[in-house]
Length: 130
Image (cartoon, rainbow, N blue to C red):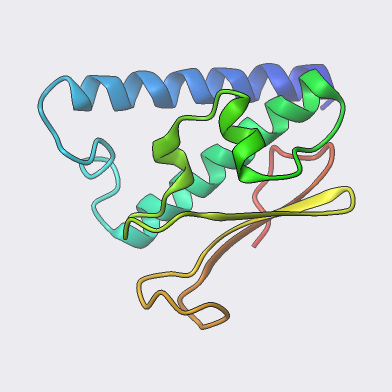
């Protein structure tokens, strides 16, 4: 898949996810994804995957990876995507032509078995890597 097609698919996924979240939110749910992802770990993984698509869109339009989470947010990411299901900020770090999005999991302690990690390499942002 070429970069333009990947960017288009990513945009469609983000728009679809945003529409689903709006639909659930409009019905009064506090955490809009809890209906689709009742398990907090699954909800966090969904947010991390969706955020990785947003990073892919950033890359497609700016031809570079963002340096920080603040830059991702300034680029248009929804603030809810930057938090895990336990209310902690997802961690983003760039590693050369790759990036990592990570949650410290329910225990809040880094580098333990319950951490949730998404790794991607530019420009391949369409397939999850754990």
